[in-house]
Image (cartoon, rainbow, N blue to C red; front, side):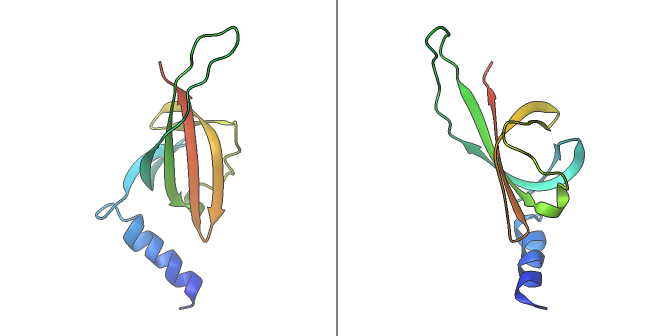
Length: 105
């Protein structure tokens, strides 16, 4: 087993193991994707002619192979059957780090 194969095995067997850290979620219409989820702090914004807008955000860590389509920044995506927008998506070593945001209501 080479180093990349060991990393991929650790990703699935440790970090994305539902018995350890991960949870199964719905993401972009795919059910049962294993990921780690943590809150993302975002700044609120206020325009010249609009009231203060408050945002909430999430950072998801998942196996890149589990989400075949590229989640492009600004694109709308579903997470747990709710609408979110992609802030950032980075693939590195088999891991996909996905930052999502939406307006608080």
